[in-house]
Length: 100
Image (cartoon, rainbow, N blue to C red; front, side, top):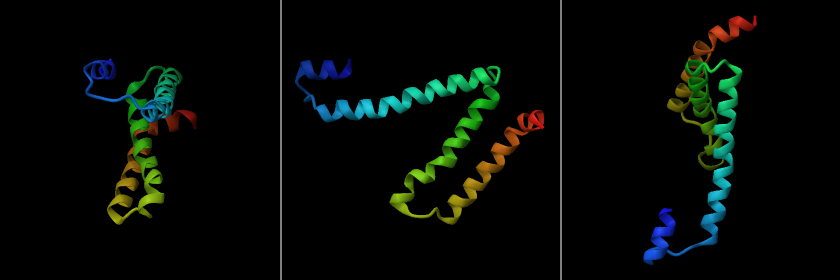
C-alpha cells in the first residue's frame, strides 16, 4: 500500500527487481513463521521453550551466513557462540531429560 501511495504521488518508480527481491525474501520468511507455529504445536504450545530455542538457533546459524564474506569468527564471536550453546542446553534440559 505504501508503494501504491508513492507511485500515485510520483515519488517512486516501480522496479521489477524489487518485486523479485521481495518474493525471494518473503518465501523464507513465510516458512520460518510456518515452522515456528508447527514447532509450537509439537511442543504443546510451550512458547517458553520454543522461542528461546529458535532465537539461539538463529544466533548459532548467523556466522555461517557471514563466513564467505568475513572469514572465521573472531575470539569474542566464538565466546558468544559457546555461550549460546550453553544457554540452549540449559533451556532444553527438561526436554532432553524427558526423552531419556
